[in-house]
Amino acid sequence: MNMFRSKRFNPLLMLLFLPVTAWATNGYFTHGTSTAEKGLAGAGVAYSQDTLAAANNPAGMVWQGARYDVGASVFSPMRNYSVTGGPTPGCSPGGCSFSIGDGDQNIDSENEAFLIPQFGYNWVLDSDSTIGVSVYGNGGMNTEYKGGTATVFDGATFQVLPGTYGSGTTGVDLSQLFITTTYASKISATTSWGVSGIVAYQRFEAKGLGNFAAFSSDPGNLTNNDYSTSTGIGLRIGIQTEISPGIRFGAAYQPKISMSEFDDYSGLFAEDGGFDIPSNFTLGLAMDVGDNGVLLVDFQQINYEDVASVSNSITPLTDGSCVPGSPTTGGTGSGCLGGKDGAGFGWQNMGILKIGYQWQVDKMTWRVGYSKGDQPIPSSEVVFNILAPGVIEEHLTFGFTRQLDSASDFGFALMYAPSFSVEGENTFDPSQNVKLEMDQYELTFAYNRRL
Image 1 (cartoon, rainbow, N blue to C red):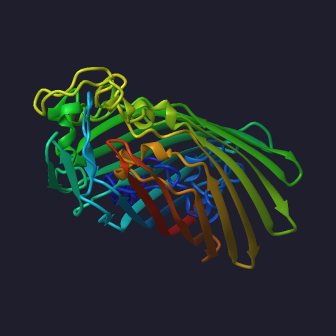
Image 2 (cartoon, rainbow, N blue to C red):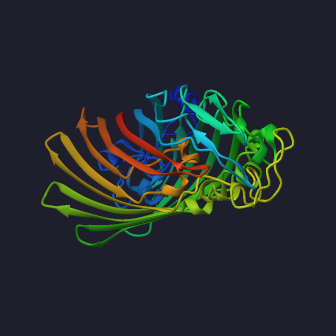
């Protein structure tokens, strides 16, 4: 089949190029990409099963043959922050106290359902190599708090203002779309390697941060500037091999992707609007169990500390690294929002252990999975992470594939992430305790066809 001849999938491809918003589950990365991997809690670096395998391990594409896979997830994150204590008067050289709420407060985010499509197509070049295209959401974050208040102390009196940070409706909207082209080749009958070229697209919007203008290096590009976009080019490389009969090993690595700056938010993100995509790697085993079962164990590391705007602490706004100015001129110093060492979300690197098991009975392949990750958000960084409460640590998953005929099947996956919370002091009013909480649900459906 000529890979450039068929036109029947163009409408799907156009749909998948549209920006989508998600709050993914390991920090802001999705817990798994393909429907099969989602049913296994994201495990599968050593055991690829479809054309979305490139998102995990490009080497797995050569074992898929000619086929396509199309699917979509309905993702539902429940985000909440609550505040106890305060507000308390007080001033220091860095400014006066800034309190979330005017007393105890409990606020839920809007937007609890997102549609996330995905698509993959693989062509056979010869008996030992393939080339494929995979389009999917790598991750994202979304919050929108329409309620809540903030309390500002001016040195003499309190002023209560609407919105989480006192500037009306507050939140962020980040989405990341990956379009990958993958070449994969067999080294032997049991070993393969692969490489994916990645075109990455991001869009971002922030609202309700106006009261931080005095701490921004570019207050005109801090907040409420509609959507800004960012692009970059990266790669992912991987290998798969059978190390002994019935035991397979897989490994994949993706270097940091340098993205163009979010120009309209150069006064928010460190390094003048920089928001690169962090490096990450995955190692894993797949072991046959009996005649029809496979046990998968993966370890994934996401290096959020690669990216200054994600990993820098909020403390430069209080330790003298940023000298506040007026809301129109902004602050001075490398620690100001948007600066070279600008304040950020304070995220740490995240390691995730993923365990999945699948077994086949007649035309049904059943899957279950569990994953456990490190907490990326320290308790000292809760104030800014009201915008980005990526606190989830565990996932429970279930899924199946139903063979429809000799060439096609239907896939399903269900994910539940139990509620988890992180709490700590308000950086700008230590008498307050801020708690971030989230739980998540996801349903994924896919149609897969071998050609």
